[in-house]
Amino acid sequence: MMKYILVTGGVISGIGKGIIASSVGTILKSCGLHVTAIKIDPYINIDAGTFSPYEHGEVFVLDDGGEVDLDLGNYERFLDIRLTRDNNLTTGKIYQSVINKERRGDYLGKTVQVVPHITDAIQEWVMKQAKVPVDDDDVEPQVCVIELGGTVGDIESMPFIEAFRQFQFKVKRENFCNIHVSLIPQPSATGEQKTKPTQNSVRELRGLGLSPDLIMCRCSTALENSVKEKISMFCHVEPEQVICVHDVSSIYRVPLLLENQGVVGYLSRRLNMPIEARPRKMLTKWKEMSDRSDRLLEHCSIALVGKYTKFSDSYASVIKALEHSALAISHKLEVKYIDSAFLEPNTLQDEPVKYHEAWQKLCSADGILVPGGFGVRGTEGKIHAINWARIQKKPFLDANSTEFDPESKHPVVIDMPEHNPGQMGGTMRLGKRRTIFKSNNSILRKLYGDAEYVDERHRHRFEVNPELKGHFEEKGFRFVGQDVEGERMEVIELDDHPYFVGVQYHPEFTSRPIKPSPPYLGLLLAAAGKLQSYLQKGCRLSPRDTYSDRSGSSSPDSEISELKLPSISNE
Image 1: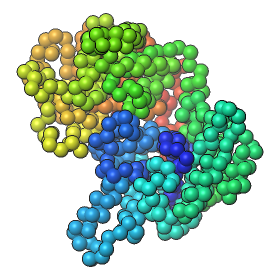
Image 2: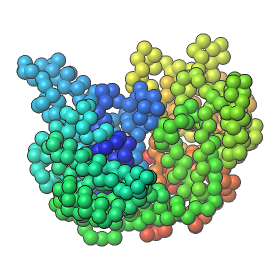
Image 3: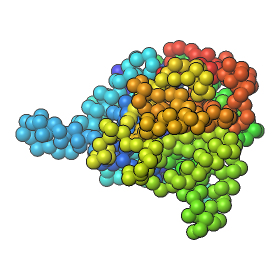
Image 4: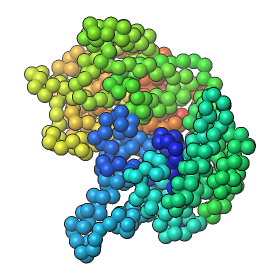
C-alpha cells in the first residue's frame, strides 16, 4: 500500500514546509524507499506561469513544460527525481476539472458541491498522481509526501483540509500520517521560547478533523526540554513526536537534523514501513556536503544582474545552481545582487549614488550572471553589464530570455512563430528540449562531458533572429548549439574570452547538489581561475574537490561513482 505523509503549516506562511517536506522525503529515500512529492497551492490560478516573481518567488519549469511553484524545485533537488505538472495541484486545476465534468454531464444532473465533489476530486488526483514513477528506474513510488501550502485556518485551504480528513479513513490509519510545522517565536525582550502559537495552531487543526503525528517546531535556537514537554502535554502528543527544526548553517543539514531525532524510526513504526537497519550512504553524502560547506575558506563572488533582485526567491534555482557549483570547487559563494536598471545612464542623472554603487559591485565581482527576465525595464542595464564583461574579459553566463521593442527596425531578438500573443498562460516554448552541439571545440560541450547533445528545460517566447547568425559569427560570436531542426540558436560562445557563454535554456532547473549544472560550473571555475586547468585535466577536479567513496547513490537501488564531473550529463 502507498504511504501518504501530509505536511501542513501553522502560525505563518513561508515557515519552511517545503524544505521539511523535501528533507523527510530525503531520509526515507536514503532507506531504500521510492519517494514522490505533491505540492498543493490553494490559489485559484491554474498554474504559476503568469505570476510575477515577487508573488511567490521564481516559476520553476519541469520536463513536461509545467510551470509550477518553486517548492517542486526543492523536491527535485533533494530527492533527485523528475516531477510532472500534475505534481502541483491548485484550486484552479481542481475546480476546472470538476466544472469540465459537470459540463460533460458526468454528475447525472446532481447538484455539484464542495463536499463531496471537490473533495473527492482532490483525493482522486492525489491517489492517481502518487503512483506516477519519478525515478530513472521507472518504479512506482512507495511513499508520497504531500505539502499543503498556506497556513491551517486559511479560507482557501478549507476544501483541501476536509478532503484529507476524509482521506485518512479511506486509505486507513496505517497508511496516512500528518506532520504539522509550526513556529516557536522567541521575543528578544525575554529570550523565552513561546509555545502558545503552536498550541492554538494544533487546536485549530484538530478542530478541522486532523491530528498531527509529528509536530515540527521551527525556531531560531534548539528547543529546550521544558518547552518540548509543554508542547507534548498541551498538544496531546508524546515528547518523541515533538521535533526541533532550528536554524542551521546550511539547508543540507536539515535531513541530518530530522534523522538524528528519530524521525525515520517513528515513521517506520507509525506507517508500518519495512526499513532495514543498515548504514545509509546517501545521508553520508549529505553530511559530507554540509561539513564541506561549513569549512570553505576561498571565496568567489558572482554579480547577479537582474530585474527582481529585491526578493532572493525570484532567483531560487539560479542561486542553488551557483551554490552547487561553488561547493563542487570548494569555494564559498558570495552573490552580489544588482538591479539592472541601476546600471543605466538614466539612473546616473536621477540617483547617482545607486548608479555608482551598482557599477562598483559589478566591477569588483569575479564573474557575471544575467538570468532571464520579462518586459523592457532594466534591459538596457543588462546589455551594459554584458558589454562590460565582454570588454574586460570577465567570466560571464547569460541564461536569458527578454522582450524588446516590437517596432524595432533591427530585430536581434524576435517573437517565435508558434507563440500566441493574445493569451499569456502556457503559451511559451516550455519544457525539456534537445540542443545539438555544432562545434567540437566548444567550451560548453567539453563541460557537458563532450556530449553530442543535451536535453535542457526552456521557458521563453522570443529567440535570436536566425537571419543575423552570419553577422554575429563575423564578430567572433559562435552559435555552438542549435535545436534539432537547426533553426533556433541555443548556445553562443565568444572567441578570445576566458568564458563568455549565453544559453537560450535554463540550466539551473536541472542542477543538483552532487551534479552541478555544467554552464554554472564553467562560470564558477572561470571566476575562480580554474577553468583552463580543469579542461586540460580532462574535466576532472582535484582530489580535495571530490566526494569520498563512502558517498552513496541518490537512487535507491544503484550506486554511482563519487563526484567526477566529466560524467555530468542532463539526461
